[in-house]
Image (cartoon, rainbow, N blue to C red; front, side, top):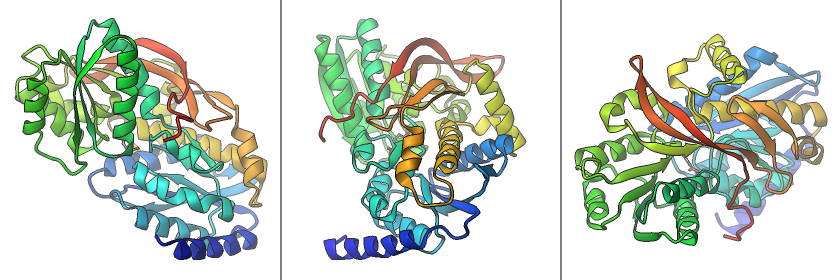
Length: 393
Ligand code: PHB
């Protein structure tokens, strides 16, 4: 967007900010996510996570009615992300923004937040730089750096010497590649190949050939959860890399639980490092899964997006409780910085510097037990920060 039209947008939003929220006793939250298209499962997860929280805690925060307004953004489109955010602030008079599955969409709205006095709670987008772009961003999901540094430690422990990296060619993929390379090489390992794949790629056979030809003993891969992750893991199996004894190590993005039945054999034994497994054994997770069902959601569709939105709603209620019906983003942010609680995923805390969620990252393995597929936790890396924050990308 040219600078002049960006300042026009900001000017309109600043007027909306002075005008304040719609009605003094209702605070609106605009949730932007993929409610249709290839990533619709995860948009649905945003909505189910929010509704599960509402089913448990009611519709009021600090005495104010809370209303969630949902807007569909089905793929990477920074221009549409900005237009939707502007419409939510100016027309719907939302006091908060939330959601965002894909990084490019989240990055597109960060320049608008300060003028508009609107905090943003990111429910998924996982590039470290997002929270650096505005002091009004908080994130309840994960970052690629956060989940990838433990993956490199696992590779070292397993005796991997030569790793080939394959990532989607956009910001979180570059973060994953950089994080893996840096951590693995620091431990004396060698990266023998690095493949970047277009987000639109559906035929992975040529990539599998490159990975096989590289002589790697282990492949580390990241693609955003969706149809392509299923395609990538199936191709890894079908083109014989698994049979050659090459190990696939990933962040959990490649093995979300709803995909495991479709992956079948191809998924079994895959190791991943991630912050949430649906099988996580805790009273908080059992309560969360019950709330999902109470809200009309399905346990078989729960993913990292559902839990991030549930925890995101928790932070939104806390911010609304602190700031009231006014637009007081500094009060709202102060209420969540350094705030910790027990999430369905385990103990978490909002880091006061990065405004990103610190959490345990688990090593998990895909298994089948009593006819159901699951990611079973094998090990834990407690209190992981966003290792990528402040690296100045
Ligand atoms: C992102 O675009 O930041 C993103 C999306 C889906 C994932 C991970 C990262 O699974």
